[in-house]
Image (cartoon, rainbow, N blue to C red; front, top):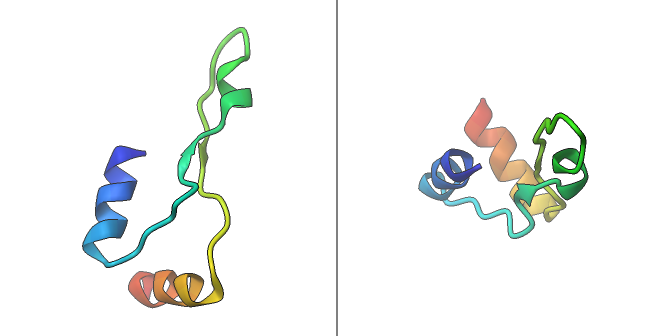
Length: 52
C-alpha cells in the first residue's frame, strides 16, 4: 500500500481513502486486501492516462 501511494504521488495522484480493508485482516488466516476507495472523475482519468 505504501509503495502504491508513493507511485501514485509521483504521478501527481492522491487517493485519500487508500488503505487496508479491515475485514480482510479479520479472517483466521488474514489475506490483506488494499482498498483503493472512491475518486473523482478527474482522478480516474488521470490514472487511466498514466496507465496508458
